[in-house]
Length: 381
Ligand SMILES: *Cc1c(COP(=O)(O)O)cnc(C)c1O
Image (cartoon, rainbow, N blue to C red; front, side):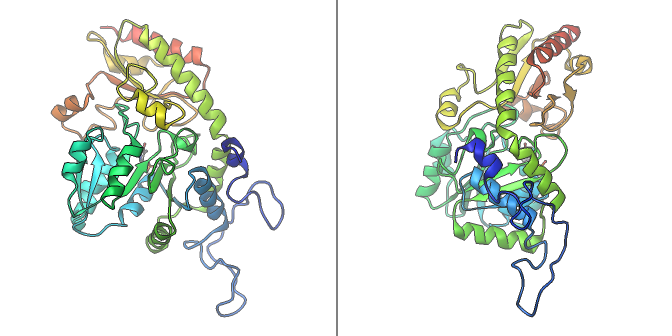
């Protein structure tokens, strides 16, 4: 089956008992057993639930993995994956990793002596140098947030394989429609399904897909033991969102390219960060490993423009956290997602105070460009 068909008919297609086209919400905590040790395959909803199972099989199909797992949020999914490791293990992470991933490592797992170190994913030499006997995994994102840096998944997973390490890829920004890390050699794929997979800014969810039975058994054990599962209603809502992923993404991409083109011609714009631009340093790698550049754009305004005035002047685009929804959302990385990063480090990362990150939605692209141009004009000081 091709991807667009899998979105609708992958995993468990409909309900085997009634023929219902939409998998029902099995809103139940427990299941009637017919005798000791005799049950329908379902015993308790932390361990298994048919609605969750449908979602988990679907994401496994979409990411071409062995098994999928659904969690209450992207961070619950990341936490479950990090529980694969033990005290004194070390994980190498992209130096531009999602802030929440950094925080859970730095402030929570650190208490259990699970170590981490950041790497420049574009420097093979640095990665090789930082691998020692304690390093057990490489955890990367591509593109990164908010600078849209690109890492070569195949190259990194080859380094990992050579040293017997796991490669973990947070594929939130790309979705399986645009990028399949397992095909490129990754062992574990993570999604904040809160973003594009859900797609409608109406739920939080996290998904994990693994490429082996061994990893599947381990994650299943962590999931049932620690219990950060996604509830049946939100599993249903997420399945519903996933059905339209390809049509939404096509529009997200079309709009993003249109906006990038308009920003490129705008003299008030200083820099544009978008891996679909041939001038972007990761352009060729991204082209090789994915089917598109995604729909998150960062750009900075020239001196003499005030970003707060820009955000206040937006009429269609929403100022807020998150990304990947049908509505366009603008964020201010310096005070929002990266507010806790010290000023000097932010400058080094390129997160200057007049940097704007845009998650391009599926509105009419002309309305979006008009909104942005109008807001830029009104932000001149
Ligand atoms: C949002 C996000 C997360 C965290 O997901 P939640 O659903 O908010 O817990 C993790 N990784 C990336 C890349 C994200 O954008």
